View (spheres, helix red, strand yellow):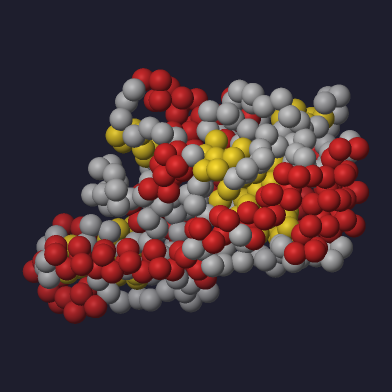
Length: 467
């Protein structure tokens, strides 16, 4: 009997079935509650005890008769992944400007040298971007799903004459060609542009709000130092009232974490937390400042291979988990991303194994206002990181683009033999571009936290199997 290296054993802290633990296999998408004596035997490789449930373990691929069987299974899963991923739709972001009307305390773009002098995208650039969405990249990539375009910045909904013209031109193009159009916006000026989307196939609007008025307005000020809470709230409410799907992004760190229960209670009184998931979803995000600084230090040091990534996000999640125990509204809101454990709660099944940790440079492209193509939102307009040009002519920088396209768990020495490779999938590569560094997060600890948060809800929904 050979124990799959992708079989994980988690503590069951749900309050249900205390005589069971959780077993999980990321390669074969399996999840069961298993009696503790067998879970412990699995951990200790006590195959004499496990002989009693041998058929169950083999049928669910928690174990194999030998290691070669698992390698063959990996090949099958890998082939299926690359076949299925071609059905995905690409995401294109049109960066209308690198200018922003806010001065957020944690803005990651201040870490980059935004060298481009051009402030606004040209109409001709939008024309070329639309052509590429319809033809070039879409055909060359072989991805057959429906592409979606998002307006991005800086801030796409500025109130200048140039910004108004670009928005009108862009929404007309989306309407003309039936392209789904969403936006990433700070929400302060968005309300006055919503009518421009009439007749447009609406994509998701991602809007950031970081707490109640007191906390948000300390972090998200306009250029004159004024708070932004009321304008952002009006934007979110207007979007919900007019059927714009919303992702509410909350940047959580040590400066606002204590405000989350009060913030959740306030949102609950607004009725937002009772919205359907496809209309309103909350995304708890980490502050990227520390991650960017750590990545920069690693790049400059010349280190290669696996390095420890920031644990700040795990620390924040642990604090949020404590808060959720004692605050009903926040518990209702607290749905962290935990390497697919959250997917068990939402859909009742384990995420498919992943070969890459991010769609950047493959399924995701950014059109900069400088005529350059970028692989990731965090790198847009940073002239150290373009992967091509789209204006005045289309041209890919093959070597740079290949680095993104080829970075997968299959072709590097760090990930190949790692037991977390189908959950972490190599992690975020944005700030490590061109290097042989892999910033490794505490994957199993985050997954255990996910089990602690979601397992009671999974059991209540009957999305589980028990031996």
